[in-house]
Image 1 (cartoon, rainbow, N blue to C red):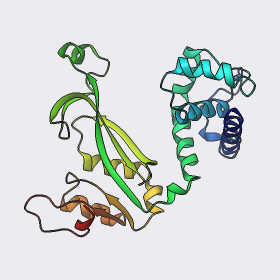
Image 2 (tube, one colour; image 1 turned 180 degrees about the vertical axis):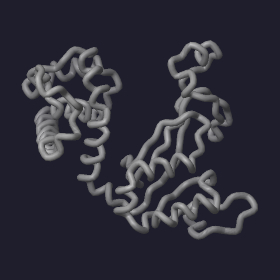
Image 3 (cartoon, helix red, strand yellow; image 1 turned 90 degrees about the vertical axis):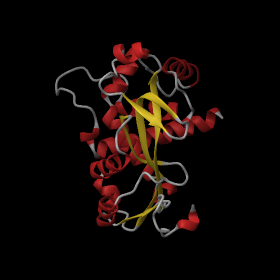
Length: 239
């Protein structure tokens, strides 16, 4: 297992490092004159990707694992606070690399994308909604699947049938799912443009003549169940 993980880490580092050399503008900005970081950007992103692949949600536990099992591959790893600061500063780089690595997989070419959103609860008390740093961004919303209200955010996700994320967005709990989907497509127009005829499967909330016309203009085909009072739609047998 250790040998396999070493191979994975080496392959990830080589791929990320090659991409950074070919596209240096992806790296976080640094002044021309200054001290170069001991942990390179390629090593930082490799650590971040490996922690996600291995299911670590605690930075402290992950860094202990790195010191124990991967010290020979990463001679220097900052403490938790320093590592967290580097990761936050490299958020755009990590997002770009995740997409680049995802495009290397066979799942990326799936011609069907399910789209949906899920609640991200951020607090359960009235006092939390007043004192939390998320106040003003997080909102009260309704979760139909659990038949309850919640205070927090909503994660919107477009993925492949195999579960590979293609597009994502984190919004307030009341954000319209249709508008959020359009915003995600506008943010990454190259993805939809490279997939003419792509099928998107959504639930009954992805409705509206103007909305569907917009998807058609983007050469995307929407499949969703018919709402109450609507005639049967194409692809109804799939639901």
